Amino acid sequence: MVRYILRRVLVLIPTWFAIGILAFFLIRLAPGDPAAIILGTEGLAGIEQVHQRLGLDRPLLVQLSGWLVNAARGDLGDSFFLGRSVSEAILERIPVTLSLAFLSIGIAVIIGVPLGIAAALRPNSARDTSIMGVSLLGLSLPEFFTGLILIYVFSVALGWMPAGGYEPLSSGVVPWARHLLMPSFALGFLQSARIARMTRSSMLEVLNSDYVRTARAKGLWESRVVWKHALRNAILPVVTVVGMVFALLLSGAFITEVLFRLPGAGNLIISAVKRRDYPIAQGGLLVFSTAVLVINMVVDLLYVYIDPLIKYQ
Amino acid sequence: MPTSVNSAFRFFRRTTSLLVGSLVLAAILLGVVLVPLLVRTEPVLMDMARPLLPPSWTVLFGTDDLGRDLLSRVLHGGRTSLLIGLEVMLLTGLFGTAIGLVTGYFERVDLVVMRLMDILMAFPSLLLAIAILTIMPGNPFGVVIALTVVYTPRTVRVVRSVVLSTAEEGYVEAARAVGVSTRTILVRHILPGVIPSLVVQETFLFAYAILGEAGLSFVGVGIQPPLPSWGNIMGDARALLREAPWLLFFPGMGIMLTVLSLNLIGDGLRDALDPKRARLKA
Image 1 (cartoon, chains in turn cyan, purple):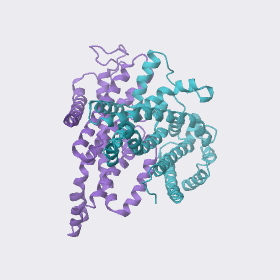
Image 2 (cartoon, chains in turn purple, blue; image 1 turned 180 degrees about the horizontal axis):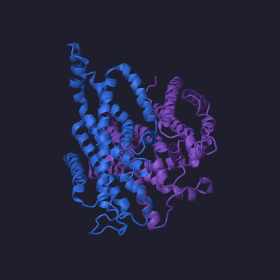
Image 3 (cartoon, chains in turn yellow, red; image 1 turned 120 degrees about the vertical axis):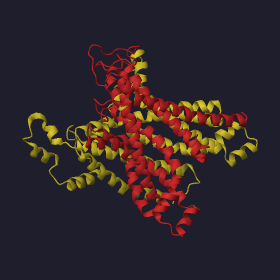
Image 4 (cartoon, chains in turn red, purple; image 1 turned 135 degrees about the vertical axis):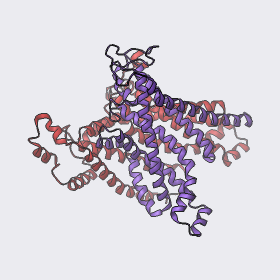
């Protein structure tokens, strides 16, 4: 097991460097000079000095290697515009992004898993058909449309909920939850559809297996067969999907962040890309891709841990 | 419930999802392709005398803050959104198939290319798209390229997995033994087996691309006005939610119905073309 983990981590290193290199060049390919943006309309008189101060006068490969080596040590450099380090700027936004991701995944699992099981227990019945129909609808609603409907009903018409903004957890659970409930639901509803479909198909596969037939033949109660024998095995692929969805939420929630004016990391990276704040943009891309890689690895390891049949080599 | 009733439900569901999906999609396509020829009001024509009219019999979908007819804008916007979805679907299909065939068949290429695909997949997809978009600002084809780069790895994975299993089949082995060229094996013997999964995958990808374009345009980095798209109409109208909710409702319904119809068709096709997987994953 230890060797398996070690090997996975070792494979991660070259992948991480490749991602860093790609992020670096991608951000720099965009036309526009951050120095010119800093100088603004006052003219380009001092542009050489600004280039020098930002380190943009050095050859690209020198900039790249310097950035990557420092990044590997955990130092992502300083923002061109915010007057602070990239790590500080990202760390400040992480609580928002994490809160949103955790609440959304909670909502998605609470809705998705029971519906998936309910559908699988009566395959192809009217109940199954309607649950799958609703989940298909969920997959077809863009999260910003769901979000706008929620804002219209609960903020504009009823006035129960704030239409946007964020309150940190430190100012109380209730204000925090009030600001995050609607965005989390908009995201979670979409993902619950994905989880319901996965739970259903995985559950169906298990319910048709030999050991479930044996359990039934032994005369076990149906509830025991479902909860003890079937569900424990059916939950495996669902774990994978939940992991994937979590990675997606960490990084793909920026549309929701924009809609609900949440000061999350996605918002930070978009504005950095727009005004060519290279350190924040490339650093943000690197941090989130690393998170995706790590989550994928953890999911794989979890899989090995839950399922004794999978042999790690 | 007796099995006969269940299989009746199954059959009903498969055929209805295909049928309903195709009908809805056909209606949307017809509206988007034909009606801009019939509706006289131009999508960019402003009429400051009638801003923010609610939907009525004279202006079916109402007007926006610049007095532009929303029906006309939604139909023209649908044209943009569907065209982008279609282009992304074709391009990812083309590149995904080519790359998937080669990587699935040649082990050495596989090692390198799949690492590359893993790297692309590790990037947050829409953030990657935004980064690519800044290279080609304001160009609608930039959106197509960005979404193609982001979504091609998904098609590669599907194609590759089919190629890997087909390459082991007896008839491929036999073709190789009698000296059929590699190109012929790939195109004549392996590619036909890939088609069913590819068709299903690309149907869902069409839906993804429409959602992707809508999201990017909604936050203001995708399709730029004055060219309307469902996403940017909604993005422009965000601040008017209280005064003119119809500006968000109609384009939103356009996106939802299109994506829903594509998902229905994809599900139906998977049932019909891929019975082994469909038995469990309806």
